[in-house]
Amino acid sequence: MPASATKALRVAVLADSDTRWKWGALTATRVSPGGADIHLDGYLLRGRATPTARQLREVGVTADSLREVTAVEFLRAMDHAATDDAEGRQPYDLLVLALVGGGVQAMLHGLGRLWRDRTERPVVVTGYVGVVYEKLADGLLLRHGADLVLANSRQDADRFRTVYEGVGADAAAVTEVALPFLGGAARTGEHDPSAKQGRRPYTVAFAAQPSVPDSRTDRTYLLNRLIGHARRHPEREVLLKLRSKPGEHTTHIEELPYQKLVQRADPPPNFRLVYGHMGEVLDRTDLLVTISSTAALESLHRRIPTAVLTDLGVREALGNHHFVGSGCLASWDQLDAGHRPAADPEWVARQGVAADGGYETAFDEARERIAGLLGRPGGLPPLAPYYTPVTAPGYLPGILARHHLGPDGTPLPGAPAADRDPGPVRQIVRRAARGAYRHGVQRVAPVIRRMGEL
Image (cartoon, rainbow, N blue to C red; front, side, top):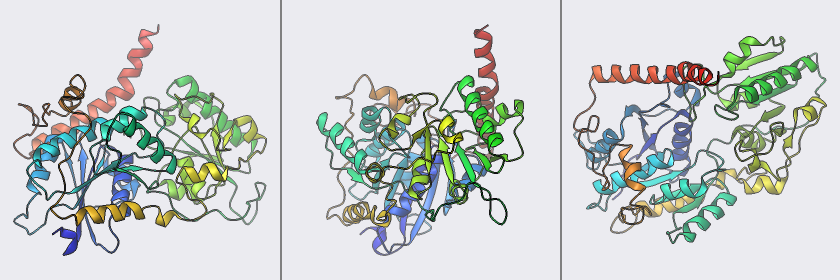
């Protein structure tokens, strides 16, 4: 009998960045069968993007426990959690893999080896943290094998099934949901952009992205246009919403933080850098501007005028091609002149935004499927990823080896902490090594590249 039938639903989330932790933890709460109390254990996969304490606080999602692990340590923890422990804790009911595709694939094979002789195992769920605009087939096939592969919109669900069916893989796991972090009060009425006394100023927020665009020229251009908008409209408050502070990493590497670029500028008093929860920024935003951030979908969900910039072109490399047909594409020249984009309702509906209601029911199918799997007579079948040593002998071993796993999912000899929990000294070394890596990415590597261009 699943633990959820007698006690709190035990859920584990494995994430490799701040954004994926946010997605994984919120997804776990959204898809858990109704009425169940949730005990959530968080596991942070050690790597370049392992979130800092500040980033975790900013996400605003809490867990009953939280620890940093390697892939092998996580597999050992799942092995130990397969049976009631000495403290009376029951096995996990649900496992959310909030990782890049290669990480998901490695865990599916590692867990598949652990559970090959067990029918009582957690329901395994995975998906994407936001808009899927690149590496569709690659990312999807790396996620194949989970019990549920979540699609954040009707459009994505259709595309996911097409890819799986096109290679002869079972598409039954694809389940349509919505982005789990949408919410907040919808914007009502029209705010007067020229309002001054007695009301807060009209607020324009630019949602920055760590890696889009990636060149100094393009990022400096965007910063200058944002500052120029603030100068042109001194009655407005202009915010640059940043994801991380210098030295921190998010899902993507940021080599040229806007904080450093702005030091060479001379912004006016109505221009500010802001951090914090995106929802809190949207609470006071009248116009959201971005290149292609998922923040655009959060903004649209709240009916906030949203502009996806075309200044650098509409290109797959930027991700703004995803918004073709949305009605949101605009340039800084247009925004400076007072243009406020109006989103196309049909396009918005296909993106799982549910601005006109229905968001609370968007996870019903996933909840029902998970409840059915938890109560499945005879337990669950073995995990069966599409990639195996037979279907991808030249690709899969490399994916698994990056996580210190052999082709059959077994930890390789010499895998970090394969046989014991990390001690205090090892934990200190890990933190120092990660700090050194981040310093190298943000300070040393750009200098070396510039020297190479001389």
